[in-house]
Image (cartoon, rainbow, N blue to C red; front, side):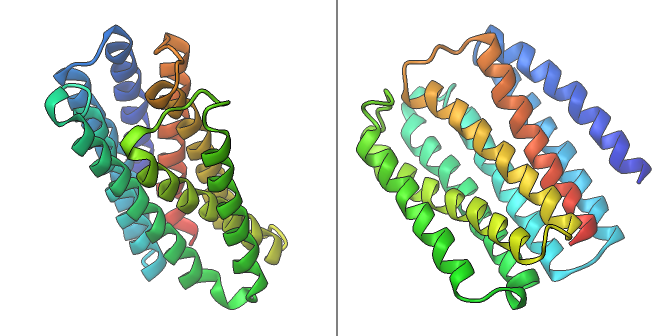
Length: 232
């Protein structure tokens, strides 16, 4: 546990340094610091996994690692303008596949608790979320361009993950510590992505407040998901 808390402190330090650099502008230095932050929460996952081995824990860590890779590509997209679109696609792909692994984790660990309805309702709600974004994107001031299919697919996966986590918490009477911690992480993930979408695809300015709230919620989400491996 000592290593987990050391990694957590290091994450806070690197994250604060990274946000300071990002507020000043995009650079290779902030990408390097972003990688350092990812290394810290991945270390939390590694230690948690060594303390509590499970197939579900392995999937959770793999999902976090793919998320870290996706975050790296999104960071690179800001400094490699000629490759911006491909880097953004790779970023969404990394996060998207990572979220699919999270879904598989939940099915692997808790699938025997639920009936078909617990899958159908989250699927329907996730579809409505994606469809709503498609219909109201202009009113929300969002312009996805050629990335529309990628974004809508990502929103569907993330929406299903959130709603499925909620359904599992309901099915287990909110008594599974892992589901509570993991659910908190996914909720923070959505908050972070909502803020990020306004900066990437909307007219929201990259203000210091937006940068800080986006990344604080993101790193808190990744930490919670990695830490939840201890209890899965």
